[in-house]
Length: 286
Length: 315
Image (cartoon, rainbow over all chains, first blue to last red; front, side, top):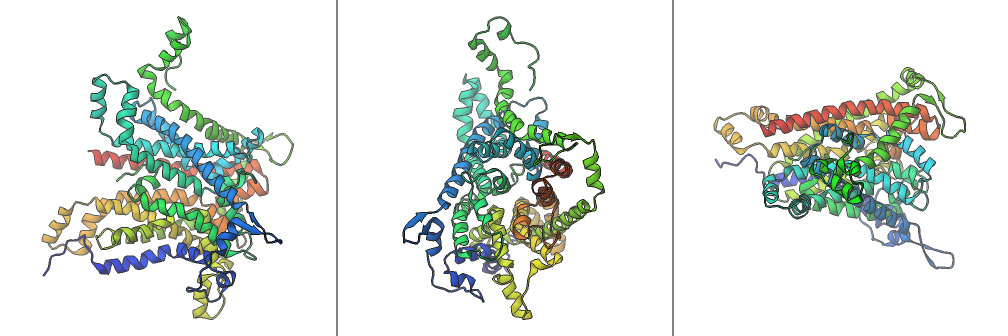
């Protein structure tokens, strides 16, 4: 009798997991497939698995053809640029403020440290609907509704709790003896932070940034109510096209979703080892 | 923050900019100073508006009218708690939470057991399974709307092959609720898997080897070795997903829009309706606070368990 270790499976295991992996990936796969179908193929009953692929849908997302045959850029450019710009700006702001705060929470505990941290996490766990009513009124009052500044400020405040909890979990993981001995040797607190602490959490900083970027890139309900025609993001544009099932151009819609998903899927692959920490806001590390 | 009360020497003796900087740079002020910008941002953008709407929930106010808010005391809360429609929405939400979180736990646990072993191509297949939870609710909502579509959808087509009749899952209340549950469970069972997997990986090998020597049965191994290591994480997964599913808005909004009738209208969707379609602003605020109350209780419980787990790991 051969002794097989309890934690080793063979190709049989690969087969089962492969089937399950396919089920999980099927909707994404189907969307991507639809993006390459012609209008007739996309509407075909029974659904077609094999067809002649076309790039027509991707062109249609970004360019309209006028009656005179000219190509005109569509608003999709604006939506993608908006999504990237708004996510980028708010994540950068949140990371700067959040990293400093997280370092303080980790190294210079305040009186009531845990209470602050609890309140901060709660603002993140809040149901969007609770926050959106007062934010909506506030934005209407201050004229921030529909502006870039408004939505960036709002997303910064959402990414802050996430950045603080994530970065605190990375700071907590570090060995403090190095820092202490550097202080003994006369390094200032700032030098310790910049030369010793920051390099050690560089990977964590990158993971936090990418997670926050995905969360912001994907956000829907606040963008729905608080962005205007100028600052509209991709999720809002996507949702507005599926109001009724009549006349939805599934091919074009799928093409837009495919482009919207590509960065997220790539990032998921890269982040594999940090996923657990990321999806639990840094509360669970191992 | 902490000790801003007693005036520092910098203000009393020499009021120069340098003095203030020096005062700020003192070691005991480092923590508050670093935390202040973040707390200030959160206070201005999140907490202040929240206090405002908490105030509003005691008034009678409509955002689309000019009339000044009228103080109503606890009327909004009283009305909500005695309104059958509100309770119906809570029941609907409860059903979706129970169904979806239950499914997520079962499927997630199964997936974790599967992926806890080493086998060829494991990393790549794991990634395929983990993808759904990173996607946006909007794209998942649209996937499933297409999937469920009675004339174009893959699901209707497959069911149609067996029954010979067109199948519209979203047309019946029970069907629509299961449709939401399936979409949510598909998206989040990988989350449960990820947590349980972390627990499974932490089980030391020698325990299994000892069990092997003792010829312990598979069930016994599972109950006495595996379960204790993942119990805590399963509880955390349960709470985390309950909090998140309780807030469900996007998926419902996109797949069923609360229909048919109000069969899939969760409390979050109902609050949205109240606030932004009926403009009963103060009532919506009050309902939002009822939701908030539930979430805060669950979040405290979650953090309590996280801390206890960390303490156990440290000891």
